[in-house]
Length: 163
Image (cartoon, rainbow, N blue to C red; front, side, top):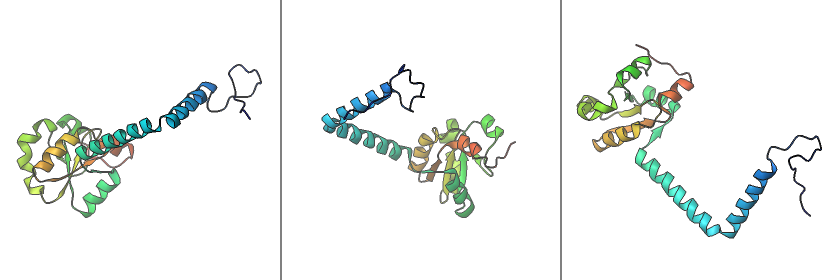
């Protein structure tokens, strides 16, 4: 029994379903391809998972904003904000240390007193901290990146210090 699909211009006056005819056709073609070439799909999925795993491993461990708050309050974590001074002045976490990424290599000695404590790295969106985290972990720091960065922090309406 064939399924009657809604077609544009049918003139029945009924609103179309969520998916139009062409989207359903493409999905049917994709499913047919996937079932006929399952081994290609399996290889593609394997490489996609390997790529995501490798990317996550290179970026280092991350913490959510809630986990960062818990670590600051309970584990005496230090927040390292690697944004420029101008961005830092627009708003930052309480007691955050500001060392811009461009000068992190030269000023890493300032972080030596915090070597035994967790170091939460913060930037604008959570992307720049990957390289900084790698550099700090190579020097023996317990560096964690805050996922989402300051954008996620402000989206969740968490407190900021503005200077």
